[in-house]
Image 1 (cartoon, one colour):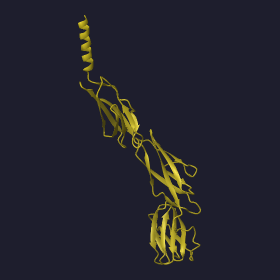
Image 2 (tube, one colour):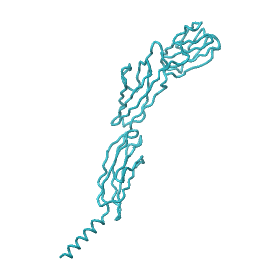
Image 3 (cartoon, helix red, strand yellow):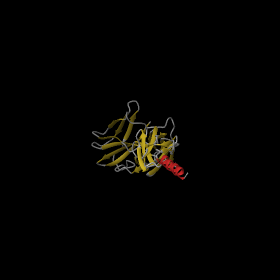
Image 4 (cartoon, one colour):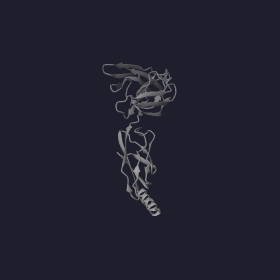
Length: 278
């Protein structure tokens, strides 16, 4: 009887330790937000004392092995469905492959349209700030929150109008479906070297004429060899030239509707004109 019990114990022991690993389901989220959102963590457990675990992700993603049973994944933008697979091995062989399907939503990011360098004007002029959003999520409409909001003259969207009196740092949060993104945007308000707020220093009074049919702008009474440049409301240089005579002609056909500064430098001083194109 003792021999039978001992034999039964040996057989059970051999049977138990001769089994290949059996994986439990992979644990982790079924839907995630892609990079630059934070990484997602996945883990697995198994029976029968596996010695190694093998992981793979299709399509490829940035995988960090935290320990054999725990991985961290940064999902790539624009790829929406992933399959995570894992298997385990011991001296007796390998387990069946356990898999998990994960939906990765794009994380919206943004960039500024135009320049963040603006020129101060007197009186203060409302400034339009435009951002463009990268990535899209299966028809979700982006929702925007700008802070500080007290300087905004229009409701929060990708295009806002702000009344800026000093350099301002905006925090912009964009939510799109299950994912969101937040970053800062600094709009610099500069004195714009060489620009005066009036033409009192100039000995000549300028005359500004605009022909809406031909889109031609004329500046009269300009000193010969004066340097003239035109800057838009975002601080972008739209035109620059040396005046050959007292009348400077500028074709504004490519100018968008908005507020422009015309800076004039001559041997007798500097001056500025303000021009609004409807």
